[in-house]
Image 1 (cartoon, rainbow, N blue to C red):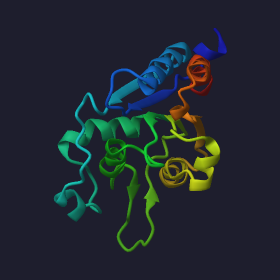
Image 2 (tube, rainbow, N blue to C red):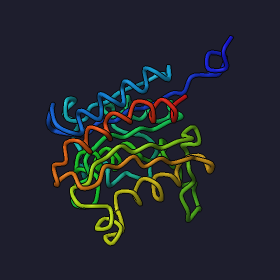
Image 3 (cartoon, rainbow, N blue to C red):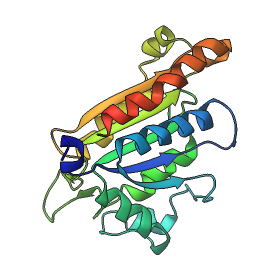
Image 4 (cartoon, rainbow, N blue to C red):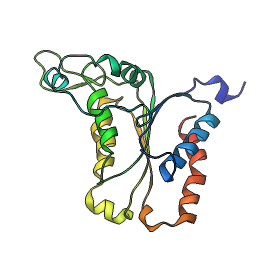
Amino acid sequence: MSRRRSARRRRVLLIHCHPLADGFIPAALTRVQAGLAESGAEVRFHDLYTEEFVPELSADEHRTHVQPGVPDELREHADDLQWCDTLLLVYPTWWSGQPAMLKGWVDRVWASGVAWELPEGADRLRPALRNVRRIIAVTSHGSPKRINALQGEGGKRVLFRSLRTMCHPLTRTSWLAYYGIDAHDVSRQDAFLAALPSKIARLTT
């Protein structure tokens, strides 16, 4: 039996966030899915726009945010987050960060009792997603990398500094970003997309 078949398959939660069915990010999603098929990973998938995910944190959720649990309509999302060992996000970077719907997914799903705990008397959150061992982002930026570096790449920091702290302490991160999409360099975009399946397969095998 091959090493790949004898090893436990990775459990991947794939989150896609883009309002259009065509364009660069939807094309990237297709390549990502091809890579996941090649790796043989178990996949649970949410397309936030197709599902009409509601990103707004309600007043009641905010009022009770320290209490464990999520609303019933978020239970599947929470279960999938607690199930996966790999979180894979495919989205465009807008205004240096995640789209509002994806940020709302974090606000509402990464909740007490799901992503973190705050024991009585404690003054620091206790990570609860020790099942997550890898975070992968596939994203696009309108401006070149040097501009994003000067701006501090806030979206990257959210994932790899803030969210990562709620995961296993040895969680690995991969940032697969296409910079300068506003330049409309089709050949360079095609090259990035063509390389995605093999990169994703390698990261999720």
